[in-house]
Picture 1: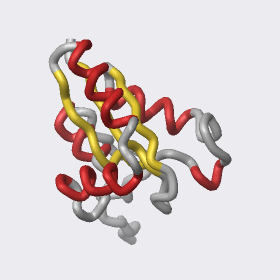
Picture 2: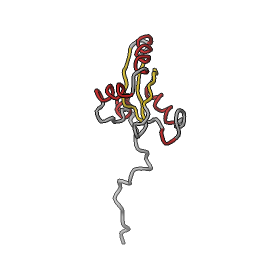
Picture 3: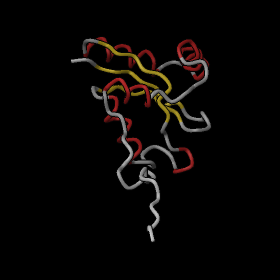
Length: 119
């Protein structure tokens, strides 16, 4: 089973949190559902800025231990090597997994032309 080692941050990039999981999208959703899990609501962890996919649990645990001991400049250097603009990678993951969000029927504007009564 594949494992992921990831780094997630808040909107101001003040906090960098390293984690490990088996389902990255489910974990990101959990962070969104529990906004004050680690910090107050102003520092909500909601941006996935880095992740690695690792094949075995033992290798993932070793990598997690190594990345967790990195200093902030080391983590920033690792993030910038693959994500120079620190964009949220969650949208790309959802696209790759096929979980595209579709607009609901009621939020779309009407596509039928307006009709006038003929007299």
